Image: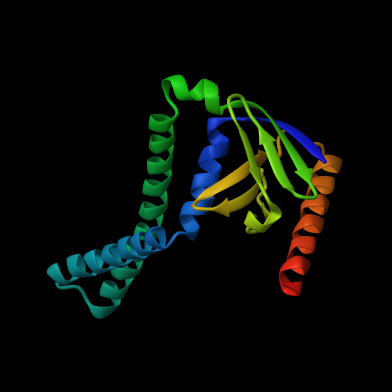
Length: 176
């Protein structure tokens, strides 16, 4: 099966966002921000001599603020990182038309300035989001396929094809 698509900066940002949420440092940073915000709001409550009920309410508001703050800061960081990485010369070599071939021996991708190949044994899974397909291959790298240019039939065929190849790879692994 062959899939053709246009890769844009927002597609890379979507992968970075998905991947970073799976990474341990992100989770630690996220929950530390939540905990510190809750503790900070609780401390503020103690400074005003509030009742235990008010203290619990303030701490809860701090936790909610921490959840929001951590998510917003992560989004800003990813957009800023992508803008820094992809400004200038890199843009013409990373973004543009791609052709992804799903073959029995693996994946072959041709882009504006490079080709990549991975065997099915390198593919961790097929990840589907509302806007993308991701085929992670380890080390934070993935094939990023935006859905926006794919018809529903192509999306269905793509999912079925990847599932079939991954199932065959799993059968090979269990036989070994």
